[in-house]
Length: 177
Ligand SMILES: [Zn+2]
Ligand SMILES: [Zn+2]
Image (cartoon, rainbow, N blue to C red):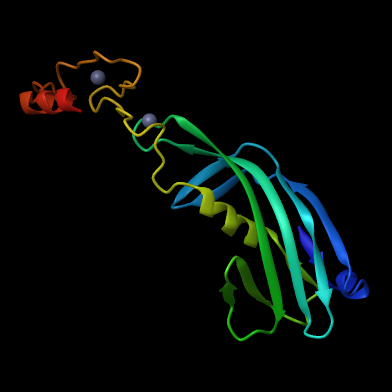
């Protein structure tokens, strides 16, 4: 997923196409390791402008990330399909800026390549839910036995792990939910 600066510079002003795919396996997100279910496919292109040394990148990328419902732990598939316009400016003072939909990043003019993957991962995380739910009214898991309460509507546990009787107030609350 690397832009080769020598190639871009040799084709100055021309659109150099990008068509790459890679397997990510997992990405880290809010302390979780999320499974990436299919390949990350990146298409688009980059153009180098010699005057200011700016590299314009226009890409589309798709993949599928598996999150898990925070209440019942069932897997939730999130399809990622994004378009991004990125501008790399040589030796810019700030690390990152943005103008509308355009994200502007710094690159070292002396470097040979720019790895796009960290930028792509940063963007695809924007489509992930920090608190994913399989459905808004997910019932979650039984705190006593771990049964999925979405699948067992009339589920009731008489005792918890310590063998104590269930709190009747909690039963009332469960009826309301
Ligand atoms: Zn759920
Ligand atoms: Zn139970």
